[in-house]
Length: 282
Ligand SMILES: [Zn+2]
Image (cartoon, rainbow, N blue to C red; front, side, top):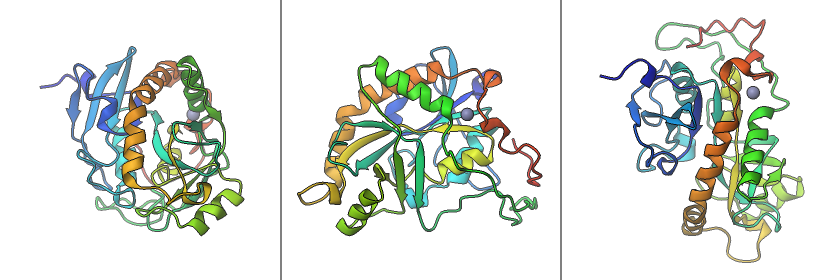
């Protein structure tokens, strides 16, 4: 039996098991949601005096490709154990030669080029439990929590990992990587890095009144930004493995720097103020 305290958390981290597997006293909590099952159980533990819920984005053993992740269930599950601030680090390709492997970039903008993912809780449909949401249009001009970005940047600097402050993350559907033409187009638009998982995580967090920010680790130069053969999955894994230790350190320092839930001064918590969504949040 777990006590009630052990089953709650303030901060959510969406990422692989490399981030929490060595923590002592991790409690595994299975959560079901009106949107189906999340990618995996939540793994709750204490870190720097904060209660943190870790969720393996791709599931244990990495069996879920980016386009098959149940993003709605993931964010809902986190909120239902008490989480109000979420960090969602992810691996990306660099779209500029100066953003080579090992670059840490904390984006401030996002471009959505996904195709098949449900990216709202409020689509007017009836859920399995009979609840019908209203149709809601939320502001999303600034997709990331400014406070979360600040914490990530300060944490990176504190670990002597000079981060790129700002830039645009373009999220593609995958699971394939980009063609050279797509990659050159993304770069020509002025976008910075390309990934497959940063969306709809960001907007679903906003729709639940959660703070959400990401830190992106460049694992390769995208096809249009390098002269060679384009990216391979093996290269991506190798660079990720070489950096996962320091990424974890930065992530944990960022967690420690986030404000207490009740001290949030950013606008994220008020995203739904005055809006009748028809849905009661957990
Ligand atoms: Zn916020």
